[in-house]
View 1 (cartoon, one colour):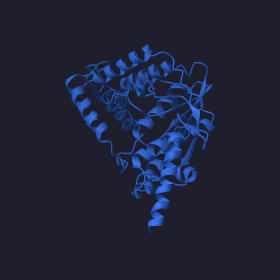
View 2 (cartoon, rainbow, N blue to C red):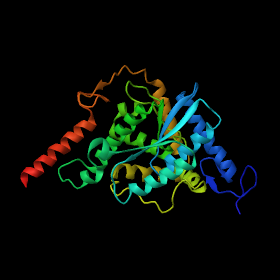
View 3 (tube, helix red, strand yellow):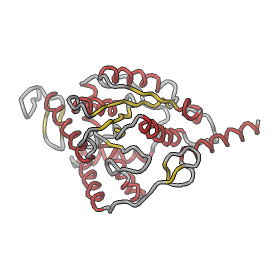
View 4 (cartoon, one colour):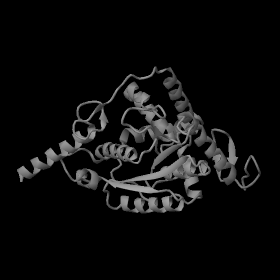
Length: 311
């Protein structure tokens, strides 16, 4: 039996980057410490806040919700809410929605569910079967972000928390470097505030994916038989993920180094003078006359009409 380096109890995880074996108690304490560090950097909770957690039904968002609820259990000036989006993916989303409702109920967190069908009149499945419309992943990602922000704003949330972990952040940083997209790097600033946009926070940005998964499984926050989205197809991100995992095995701490590098870059960035415009159709903030969501809906409607005429 491998023992915890802090108390000699049975260890459940080994952190290669720290050289520590940790038992359930010290593992949870370490994970919560990392979450608290990330939250302090946002400065959102100094005077109380209402936070909407984007709950997907997966391990990371469930872990984020659990941690926020535990950390602020005694703070009456902090309100934690949960928000789920039904993108309309049969065989996948109904199961995760059910699990998400169970988690929210168990943690006694109010839950709001919004759907693509009700809000946009279309589902990701319908986009996927259209040969002339956008790729389902692109469509789903853009529309999901729009609906999350819109609903969080309607809920009066001071922040929108997502389940992005250290691996997600490191992959995004490296992807943007590889693409030469420096401007998009600055959008990763924690708690960035823009008119009409609910500030996003990432409680797990310093928590490795392996630790988030271990935490979710040991706290019964994630069903072991839950499958993945059938439309996942991010070839370049998958390559970067594999490459980073290889580096991490050979050079423990690589992912943390990428995150620290990003934070240093963000510190050198002067305050942005960017002022978003308002979409002429839906009124949401955007960078041009028409937001990306409305452009996608317009493109799909055009493709649908063209397909009908061809018949």
